[in-house]
Image (cartoon, rainbow, N blue to C red):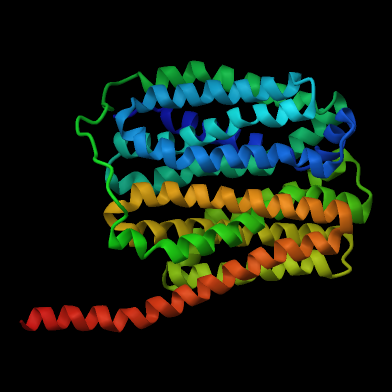
Amino acid sequence: MPSRLLLPVLALAVFFVGATEFMIAPLLTPIGATFGATPAAASWLISGYALAYAVGAPLIGLVAHRLDRRRLLLAALALLAADGLAVAFAPTLGIAIILRVLGGVAAAALIPAVFALIADRFPEARHSQAMGLVMLGMTAGIAAGPALAGVLTQLFDWRAPFLASAIGCLLLLIPASRALYGDETTQVPATRQRLSGLGSSGRSALLLLIAKALWNGAAVAAFGLSGEMLRDRFATDTLQTGLAVTAFGLGLAVGNLSTGLVRRLSHGDERLLVAAVLFLALSFAAFLLLPLPLVGALFCLAFWGIALGFAAPASTALIARRAGTDKGFVLALSESANNIALLSLLTGAAFALQRFGLPAAGMVLGSGLALGASLLLIDGLVQKQAKPRRDGSCRSGSRQ
C-alpha cells in the first residue's frame, strides 16, 4: 500500500509548480520598476519559464521511463527551489529571465514524475481519482499564488514570494523523501522502451493537440497579463491586483471539481470540450470589451477559470484516447505545444499592450483563442465524417 503521505506530498509539489508559474501575474510592474524595465519586459519571466517547459517536456518525457521516478521528483523539487532563489537574488532582469529556465525544467520533470508515481503506486481503478485530487494542488497554487504574492510584496517586496516558494520546496523534500521511500512498491521499470516514430493513432490526435495549444495558450497568456489589464483599467495596487486575479484560480478550482458531473450531463468529453471553449471565448470577450465595473471583471475572470477547468481535463483525456500506444510521447508533445503557444501569444500580447494599449493586446490573445476554437470545430467535423467510415470498415471486417 502507498504511504498516506503520498497524495498530500504530490499535491503540495504541484501546488508549488502552479504558484511559481502564476504568482508573477501581479508582480510585473514592481519587478520592472526594480530593474528599470517595463512590465512587458518583465513578462519574459513567464515566457522564459514557458520556453524551458516547452523544450524540456518532450525530452524528459522520452527518457523518463529510464529514470527512478522518486529521484526525479526530488531533483525537480530541488531545482524548483533553486529557481526561486536565483530569481530573488538575480542582479539584473536579463539574468533573472535566463535563470527562470530552472523553474521551467523543474516543472517539465515534476509533472510527468507525479503522474507516473500515481500509476505505479495505485490500482488502475483509482488512477483518475488520485490524479484529480493531486491536480487540485495545482489549482490551489494558481488560485493562491497571485494573492500570496500580492500580500508578501505589499509587506516586504517582490522578492519575498520567490523566497517563500523556494523555502517551501526545500521543506517539502523531507516529507517527500519519507513518502516516496516509505515502501518499495515502485521499481524502475525493467523494460526499456524503444523510441519509434509517431504512429497513425498518434497522428490522429495532432489537430486536436494544435487546437488545444492555441486556446489553452491564449487563455493562460491572458491570465498572465490580467493583472496588468486590471491595473490599467481600475488603477489597482499590487495587493489589490494579486487578490483580484485570484478569482481566476477559484473559478478553475470549481471547474476541476465539477468536471465529472458536467461531463455526465453533457454526455461525453467531446461536447463538454466544445461548450467549455466557447464559454471561455465568451467570458474573455466580456472581460475585454464590456465596460464592466471591477466586480464584473472579477466575475468574468472566474467564469474564464471555470471554462478552462472544464476544457483542460476533457481535452487531455481525448488526446490520450486518440493517441493510443503513443500517448506518452503525444501528451509530452502536447505540453510542449501548449508552452510554445503560451510563449508566442504572451510575448506578442505584452508587446502590443506596451506599444498600443489594452485593445491591441486583446486582439492578439483573442486571435489565438479564436483560431484554437475554429480548429477544434474543424477537428469535430473531421472526426464526425471519419466515424461512419470506421464503423463501415468494422462491419465489413466482421462479415468477412
